[in-house]
Length: 324
Image (cartoon, rainbow, N blue to C red; front, side, top):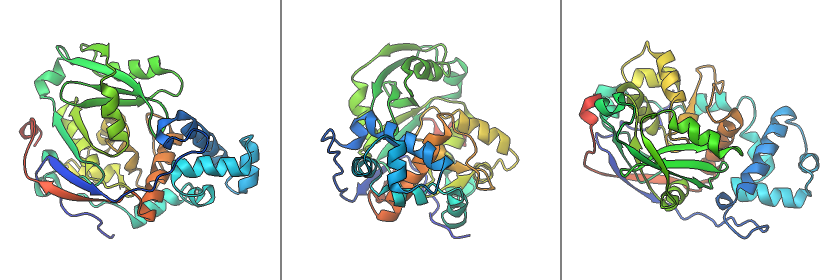
């Protein structure tokens, strides 16, 4: 099995230099596609149709969408960066299995790789700090968490943050209150308030310009989430590989539960975790969105758009010693 990544250093600060990206502006709104939920709404509908009828032509698919072929192609390409026909190849039923065969990220055992001290990041200038086990046991008591609604490449999102950084990202699918309640239940004793100041943080994170995370979870969960952060965009891993990476090879089921409890959708890439068979497995925010995320990353990875190279800045943050 080919290896696509080296063992990550024991560090939590990374600077990433990105290649310039082409400007995909939608002719409908003259804005980047992530700034308008219209784009993902169109794409999500198309993904469901493609999954049910994979052999449709562009014209037939556009007709199902009640759109002209030209307009549909413009909207779709603005979001995906590739044509609908090309993107459909990444949605094939066997694509996940091909990813496992060709782009399986090989994760090292925790003692050798330092995963519990921070993973090597390939897609963001990202810093993260973990809460202490004692604070987690208190259910977030004494923690003030702000929230806001923000556009993302995968639909409207609820973004939550503490003074330390972003601690939650969920997707509304038209029901912001339900998504906010979903995230809030993870820290039931925290206090919550709407905070528009989080919007610039969310915009930078979704655009790949950088983010700071505050991981609010138990020690085992944080180990799993840090292992996920070591999986580069365009590559995938399995629940079993993550269990081995954190030196808990028998804890595959518990790893799956921790992945399902990931509070920071997209930035902590639980969508890159598959079953050993190549099946998608579950995804808290819907399998359509998981397929969209994987295909979106695969398309941009193969096209060279947004490929990032990491330069390591030595240093440590937070309570990493508590999770080793």
